[in-house]
Image (tube, rainbow, N blue to C red; front, top):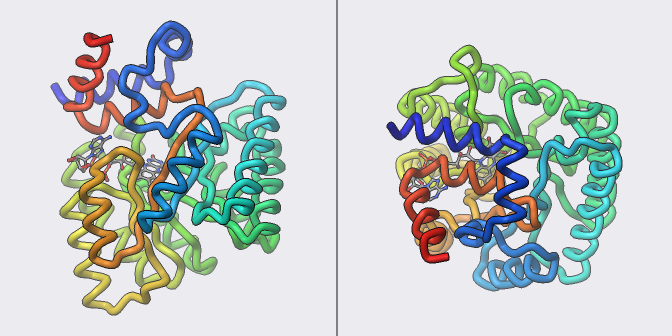
Length: 306
Ligand SMILES: Cc1cc2nc3c(=O)[nH]c(=O)nc-3n(C[C@H](O)[C@H](O)[C@H](O)COP(=O)(O)OP(=O)(O)OC[C@H]3O[C@@H](n4cnc5c(N)ncnc54)[C@H](O)[C@@H]3O)c2cc1C
């Protein structure tokens, strides 16, 4: 039942018609629990608040799978403005973007050009750009772009690997020579059994292994999860192996398990909160609902209340 609900919500996330309908006619239906506003000013208020409390931030301008080169360039331009704003306000924040927002599904060369421009601006202001990982159809192209950037001497970029994909362990090994800055996650999309593990136990096992491999690998590891067992396993490993403090951080999503976020921070661990903002919240929101069936009841309750 939970699996059926998850796959229905993830299928709905990429339904363009439903997206248009809900975004145009719908109210925010509780999406604001996970999204820090629609404008840069609203977003910057959330960033300032989190920074004051000691959290680092990763900014995500909501949007993905754009259909025109013009939209892709406009998204890149917005990222440039966000980086300038971070520099101006001295925010402790970097950016995390989706390559399909910068045109990957139209032409990988377009996405490369756009992400290069964003990374270039980030370098100018001493900042960093993370490329999120999307559906498995984009994994190879995303890693190719990451390698091409690093090969061209662009070092202020990072990538993401998803534990549910069979290929991720091999991908992590093959990136080792680059000492990559990698964010590790379980994986948020609907993937077929031909490419991804389906059972939670298997995904959790692989996730723990990937984290340990990466922590010992000499790069930077962002452990992105709200899972107590994975966090405890990671902390044990960090302490047992004496992993250097500056070589990892925990990452969590805005609005998800805030008490756990506070607890890790109070224990002295670095915690970065991924904070999305913008009007294109529908697919992001559907993925957050799919992660926890209880969120659906929360969503239905807010619809009912209006
Ligand atoms: C900073 C960050 C960046 C990410 N980037 C990517 C990416 O680039 N590509 C990608 O595919 N995925 C990404 N994800 C999503 C990730 O793949 C998972 O879907 C998501 O983190 C849920 O998995 P979990 O590790 O928290 O474990 P789970 O087993 O799903 O959750 C553990 C516990 O956390 C709580 N929880 C988890 N999710 C929610 C939620 N939405 N609402 C309320 N409670 C919740 C529940 O209590 C649950 O029992 C990212 C996640 C984070 C934290």
